[in-house]
Image 1 (cartoon, one colour):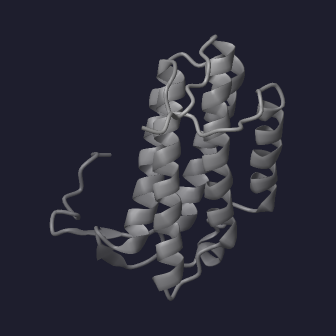
Image 2: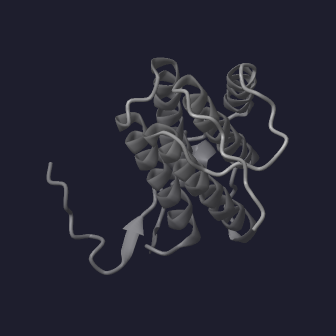
Length: 182
């Protein structure tokens, strides 16, 4: 199978089990940003994260493919791509709680910096927040359903990526840098 099909040369792409739409359609923007997030998580993993965190990120990467499949389907239930539910949101919450338990509580804002892995996770967090905004826009403007759980998943994921960046820094001996008003 060839990687290129030339079917998108006119600026349109096909949705999963759905019509062709413009490549700047809100649905494409949403799952394209989720794809970008997944790639940034791959970059973070290439920075040699601690094994426990690498395993969490790998599971998240698999989850993001499910998010993308659901977003790429105008009718996820009919297409059988409705894969993101409250169980996945609960797992993110449990992982946040576990990861945060060993960290010093935050009392001030911190800068998104640290080791290579932590910095990459901070970038991924920013992309995650953008993906969440794109999905909110899609949900508000689309006549097709967009699962509430997808928004919840991305919201918790942004929180988790922040905590994981702090955890990586902690495990690798890098102290949080507190924001200083100038």
